[in-house]
Image (tube, rainbow, N blue to C red; front, side):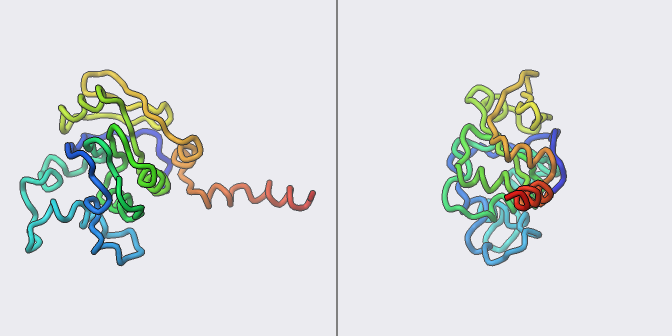
Length: 190
């Protein structure tokens, strides 16, 4: 995982409330254990017609969405089953942050472990972001802030250990392996 400090990007707005993990990545795509390629199945039932053709009206199929790394969603993002494939699909599609007023606990934990920053902001900041699709914003992981289209900033909470891992580009195992010398010293003194 690459160290992450600042994510600067235009936003994609998907202003639907209660987007659950089955909508993010339908169950029929959960047969794989490899993260690569899951981005194509992201929001599949909304994104593609029955025959597989892209629906031009769906926001991720529009040219303005290409290259965006920040998804602004409606309230209560990521509820439902605990499938880790949901953040895998978002990351594989190029997203580095998801913004909502609330993000489901299990989804948040899975996102943090996979290099996706869950940004929960207050209603006023959320409304400003929803009203400005395509706005250039900045998620500052170190400062725990997101810039708003009106020039202001909003703060967001993030678990300290998960933040440390993202800032340093390590996962939980990588963190433990980096402590090998201290662990060995403790064990030999014991």
